Image 1 (cartoon, rainbow, N blue to C red):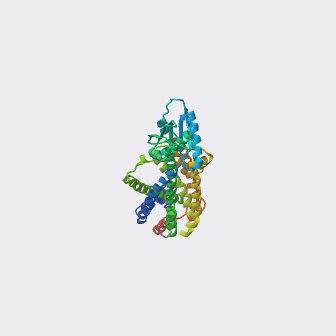
Image 2 (cartoon, one colour):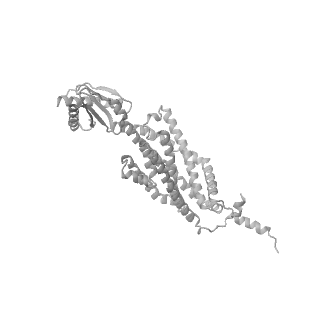
Image 3 (cartoon, rainbow, N blue to C red):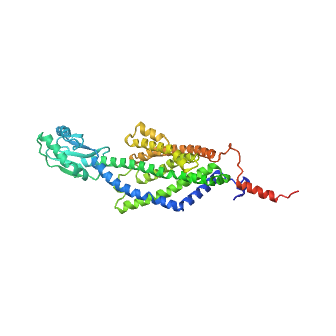
Length: 422
């Protein structure tokens, strides 16, 4: 131990003490058998969730509603829209919504492929040509699903109540605005769910670790040589480091499963900020969300003395965080509205809201502002939680008082023995 530590009664400075605690907790947990089983536990549900997600995505894709644009001569556009409405009333749920894109002049061309590939929103297909020879431009899946329907609508628009469906020409595109938009929304929802599960799963580790050390009196020994604020910070950042290790293992396993199945990131819709930046922002928002919730859990853990009390006291915080997550989930359907801005401003929901924004929007400057805003609240939460931790764990007195710990008392005994008696 350094000379400065001995002269101050064996107490380290706050930052040096926080580093000591973080290193101690990190290595102790990382090389424990319990942590190995903790890493293996979620891998089995991940496989099941991956299989269920694939089935669910297929069902959602089949049930998804998207628009079919009409770009024909003016009279043909009106006839197609009227026929669609009539058939939709007779056969509800079978005819996709149709919208007017453009009224063409006789002989005018329309580049449906370019419009569809660059479109945003719910446009999923374009019908051009004429009522006698309509042409459907869409992805392969949309063509297989809607080719017959478009022929039926064109025949109804041309012949009336007893239609004869004309042959429908096709033009295949790789993607569409609706498909890209839907993929980004799924990425936003998946990112929010994954961020929530990781934070809730990993933040709870700080509670059990704290209660265990309070029960066997280790926390009192640490407090004798290290400021309680340093103990709080050390434990918080040690668990953050352990969480990063866990995410790296789970992420590597998940990527291996995807690659083994012949899938890659190119099979998914590209997020608004791109995959590399999305992963970087996801990591940053995880750290912010973890530190916010972890500081709350540590403060709650300082109030408990048994595992049962931890479960009781942490339940309100957990339920509140679930409500926060559902509130942030509304951002996906209210982009640019009051709900999105409220979720971005509220510190506990801000990481979830910004992850969704990174998936659907291309701008990066809002993330710089959000990370600065969240960092400020992390400092506030950590400072407040550390103060409660210090007062509740050791019942410490006013600031400025120095607690005489076991090390300083032991040094005092040796000094007294070495002092000659008169």
